[in-house]
Amino acid sequence: MAAAETATARTAATATQTAAPGAAPGAAADRTGARDAGAAEAIGNARERIDALDDRIIGLIQERMAVSEVIQRARIASGGRRVHLAREMEILGRYRDALGRPGTQLAMTLLELCRGRI
Image (cartoon, rainbow, N blue to C red):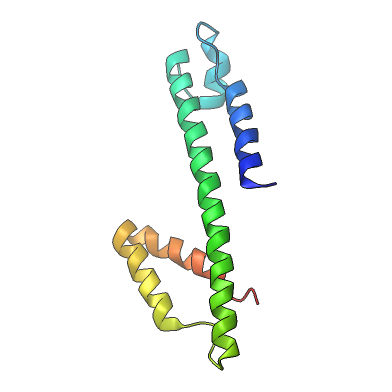
């Protein structure tokens, strides 16, 4: 399913998860953990935004994977290695500097996704 279709499906699902104003708060609480309809609505709206952001992030990661493949193919065709460790260290440092220690793990996951697809 394409990212845009996923976003639409998630938005529709989230809309059905939040209680209408004045509805029994129990239904919304079951889905959001909120104790009142106002909080449930705020949580539902924020979740829609997070879902949309996640769809954009996934699309960017897929784009990054495609660009990485182009780089790997060019490097191998020129007689180089598939992976350039110095460049990977730069990426790890960049994510660590921007996001702290968890950023390193995120960068490792990204690098893993982008390696060896050819």
